[in-house]
Length: 464
Ligand code: ADP
Ligand code: MG
Image (cartoon, rainbow, N blue to C red; front, side, top):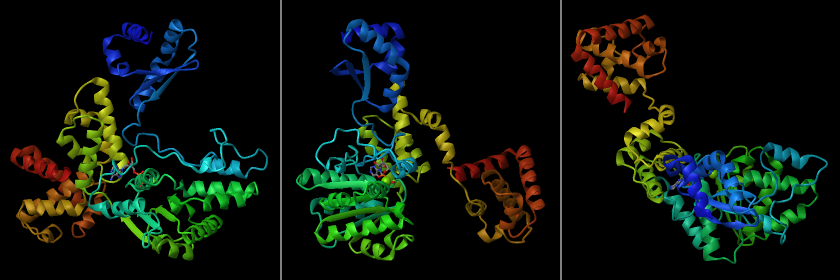
């Protein structure tokens, strides 16, 4: 009857729409009164849910009165950092400040985990993000040391020199990914070891909840019984002195027992001001590994790996565009690629440079290259065979003055700087001089096609 439902839907919505949105649906089975349908991406799932969910349910009921609901799920984890962050791990309380307020509120007792209560430690055993494994982590110069340390800890937890392992780096550079990879690998290689992973934020909520319910003994015992404790985003504990103190004791107790600790933060232990000295000292005692900002090469490799995993052909030019524009956060880079892939999948069309510009218009605009005045001066001087100092000097010879005007014009066009500021950067000239330069160059461009071409070329060089 699933085949009949699909056929009905196809008739109803038409072939084009069916192929765009519905073709990839598969039936996972019937669970009780619920038909479970799978789609490969979150995007598709959400779309189908909101546009065809009711219709699907009605069609099912027409075929099978036992089916009252239709549940559309994502078949495999979506390729990469879409809108949903990895789930909040391990702990039962609702997250965010609201969660804190609730934990502290006098009356209703702590919310229980949604999972049925099982053995005491079950809510500490954490679901990890399936795609954050070593297999999917792309190694390059900026992260090779951190990666090697993480591997080493995964293979031989608590070896001397690697305990604690402290990973640090900017947002979206792969700290959480590496930590999950370590946890996955330990679970696989040494299933007898218990691994507890949580964000520092969760650690704090958990601790506060324990205080509130006068259950700190259980909190301490549970944590001290794990073999590997991983705390992500430790910077969250800055200024939270009581939680820091508790973590310090947990830390010492575990290290004394020969248990492995892995911590991540956005700064090195010595730069984590607001974290108690004695804790910072201990955090820096094992292995400290920095994940550096990505390089262009690493960004290309990551994109290639993700495109291959999604089994979508993405032209090199498109990868180059993304890697050169979206330079900060790998999550954003993945998000951009995801959008292209989703778009291509929906419309059954290949990814091209044109579609990339079209689909990622807003994103690329937000990541427009910021050109500095100095860069402009350098390029213009180079182009006209002048020295950089000529750009700011008082010389008024035509062969110097004209290029200088061009540079001022470009500074006005390509940067957000004000006229007085541009003037200052060009050897302390007055803003009226800049104004004059801008209009003079515009005028000349009207009159002289060769000159206009020249300026356009410079502009292009600076913009890409
Ligand atoms: P952080 O915790 O440092 O803020 P995450 O670990 O959450 O960053 O990484 C952000 C996203 O980028 C994740 O989806 C992750 O899989 C991806 N990512 C980061 N670095 C890499 C890498 N070297 N290889 C593959 N994916 C990466
Ligand atoms: Mg993280």
